[in-house]
Image (tube, rainbow, N blue to C red):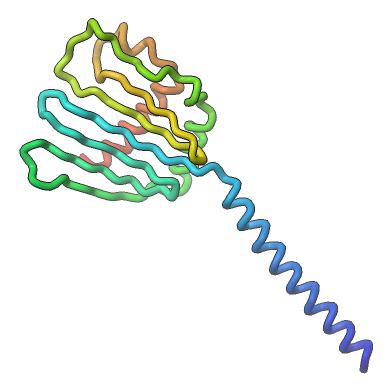
Length: 162
């Protein structure tokens, strides 16, 4: 009888240990995953607007549209599919965002297109990049390919709100 109770006690301990360890491993995996958030803002231009697209670490997309003729900003929200979010995070992590220039802008280029600011946060570390929106080829080819891919993906996400 004592041996059966001892075996039952050991079995309960093993099951508890397995449950605890599986929760611990899952929690550790989630915590070590890089927390990535991004804010893309367009300021000014012909419409005198201040629009932004925020991508949260959990995949929420928040598009804020503020025309200076509006009393309140228009805020719209969507959620990325997990595969899209992981693909975007991979794109950010594989690009050397902290190696990008801080400014991609030509002071000699006068345009009525809006200026933009891209802010990327990875685990609390922030990179801000300022640039002009332009269709001038000389200006855009100075941007690294990785930045162009990130901006293209942002444009794709923003298009979902139009």
